[in-house]
Length: 219
Image 1: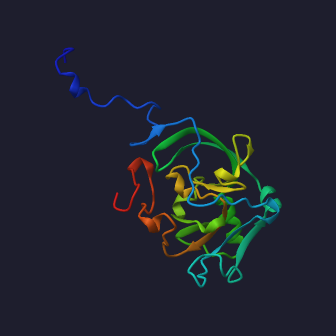
Image 2: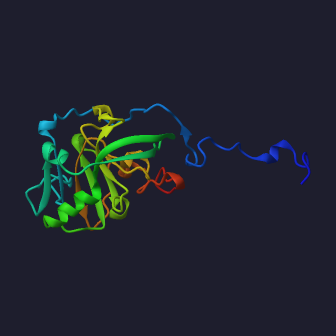
Image 3: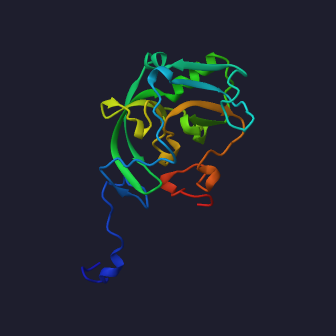
């Protein structure tokens, strides 16, 4: 087609920076914005533990209130840090529309934690709920946290993970919007039934795929 055959208005939207790594509706940032729904927990490492167990409904319907029911796998901070760890570099995408490239993390794969839970007699289930200090929860299909797609991370950019970013440890599920990467995580509860977490119960999308712009219920 000859140059100048169509007017400028047909040329479409300029290509976004990032070579196809920025999902639709997102913008690229070099900052690391801090967003949370409440006060920042500051749990000393000596008081921190991580547990994988089956779902145990408590009086308020929250996981973790009957931790003594059924088998579980539990690690203290020192035990958790002694597990084999990996370094991963991933792009992350927040539902508030920022995307950050090449974030560097250190942590333990969820695959390894679930394998230890299997060995401890925790029944594998179709869904997990991540539960955290401060009462935050988020739900995920087991397929979104297995197959080398999710980690419990304690290091960021070569340093201990800061409390405002979820330290001493947070879940990292980089292929979903970042609210699924629960800050201040303390464990995973496995369930045969999908149980919406904090934001999912308040109208956010149940899964949160940034490439599908699954921001809110109905997207």
